[in-house]
Length: 246
Image (cartoon, rainbow, N blue to C red):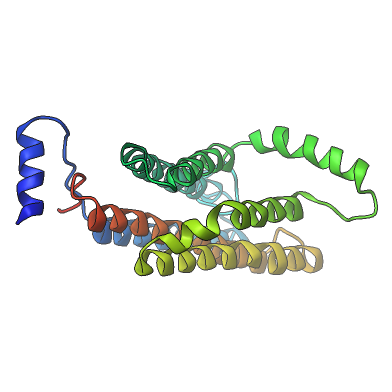
């Protein structure tokens, strides 16, 4: 009752516009569309390798989940941008409340927007390559590549900035974040390990490699969708000023 009165008072005073959404329904719709894109991609690759319809009027490469310039990649960019937007909303609320972990939220927003920017472009090459060059010159005995550098930076940032942050969150939010990260990383590593192995043995232009890529990319998107639900659920449960009801 108090929460409803507070929301009504805020709306009546025109201090804030309340957005009515439902995190569960939104996540379900996004997840189903992710599966749809993966199935369409596999169907297109089956046409490519089992029939004479290699391009099918450009539709096969357009829905190829492993290509940079494709609808599935654009969809991944959209998911990351949504995560960046939700992180920004939460960080603004945290700054208003002078929360001790407000900087972690804004840094999360920056990370997601950066990932969204680089997902469909080659901007990351201009950032990663100079760092790799410096590290290779200083640590010539270590086999440093882009993947190991990215993972190392991620682990370091997490250990330094996010362990206390994670434990400060509600139990449900903690579990959902960890599950989201696990699903995403399983998809990522399946492509890096199984995908690279399949490409080395069979070549990148074969159906087995495309199936591995489709499964891996779909797991990545599933992890992002689950995290979108997690952030939306966090806002709905703990901040009455922003309403997420359909």
